[in-house]
Length: 102
Image (tube, rainbow, N blue to C red):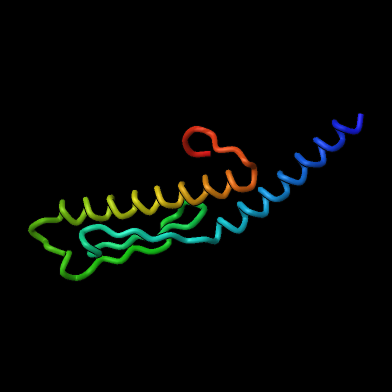
């Protein structure tokens, strides 16, 4: 049954490549901004926020809610970018793109 052996080897090869790719992606970072760059968020492939920068002019004690909204928007956009990067890399390795995040 040569076909089954070849299939198993291919599955193992893809699994090893996917494991390597995911380890590499864990170290990658993406950045997003909100408020015209007033808030910048950076996340890594482990979906952790690794940096958050707030421009001093974005800090208005009279409008804390706006700053909170900008932080949430920047972090969420960075997470979306990372999810897209991760999905693209998984699809590249496996040749399959499933629905939604992998």
